[in-house]
Amino acid sequence: MIWLLNDVIDERAIKTLSHNWVDDRFHCGSDSNPNLTNKRSFALDYEDANHDMMCQLLYDQIKPKIASDFVIKCVGQPYFSWYKPGCFYDKHLDAFPITGLCPHFSFTVFLNDPEEYEGGELTITVGNTERSFKPKAGSMVLYSTGLWHQVNKVTGGVGRKVAIGWAESFIANSAMRQHVIDLKHAINEIADDIPEESLKKLESVRVNIIREYATL
Ligand SMILES: [Fe+2]
Image 1 (cartoon, protein in one colour):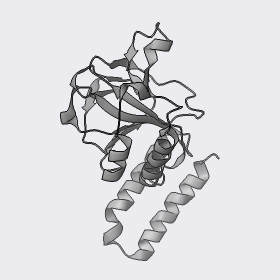
Image 2 (spheres, rainbow, N blue to C red):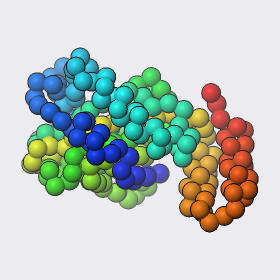
Image 3 (cartoon, rainbow, N blue to C red):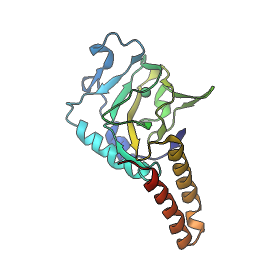
């Protein structure tokens, strides 16, 4: 499954997280591993003076937006990834485990607007179809980690600036996880139109399903 979530980070966070992307703060993955032929991109150095602050700011912004709706147990450390012109990531599956967790969701948070670079779409394969995403800054594409995906080559502009990461759900069973997510979204849609008591009953059903299927 794939979800496109708009405005998961606010304007102030977009500015802070996309500020001062200059060559000497980033290293190329291919430099340390010349055998990597399926990928070329640049990652913010872990030792960068602002790295930890940026990770914390991203956590603080995205966790409230996804934790409840997607039954998230933990979010792994994100990577700030810069796809300069010529960068790409061929079609692949994400590893297991990754960033210390069992990933149920992969996500990309877009830190600059699509007009700032050419190419660079995130393309995800579902069944025999493909969906491409190049949303506005502040958006997140959240998708099931088992899906094949790629980043199309960036062909111009200032490059594609993103934060990527993974999240683990309390519900390991993929079918039940999907049902609970759908239930939550349905509750959100009708929350303003039904009596408070009815809303509480629906929410208690959702929580009891989670209690039945969750693993800590
Ligand atoms: Fe990936």
